[in-house]
Length: 123
Image 1 (cartoon, helix red, strand yellow):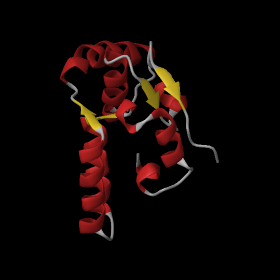
Image 2: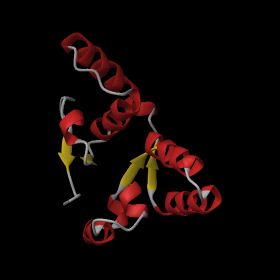
Image 3: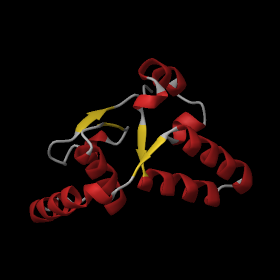
Image 4: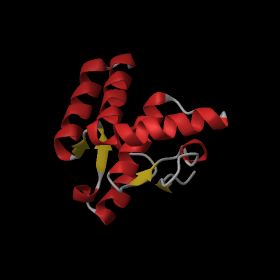
């Protein structure tokens, strides 16, 4: 979502194609966006941008994803292919809600079973 907020890679056009009403973010993604704003040189401006974005998009809670998270974390630990907890929670949220995960980080998240991934970033 960072690239979308920065107006890069024509993501605004892709989101228009699928409709913003069909796009969702995890609570964890929102937390990461807020962290990024706090780490920036323009905290207030970036926090306002994140808050405005959060008003426009559906934010999916993680509660119903916790079983998927636990199952996937245990499976990945046993296989020695762990993921960062936040990435795992975001992926679990997509799986639990039967959503397509739009990410440029497919090479890591595709370790999760039953995840459906699309990459909208063309470099």
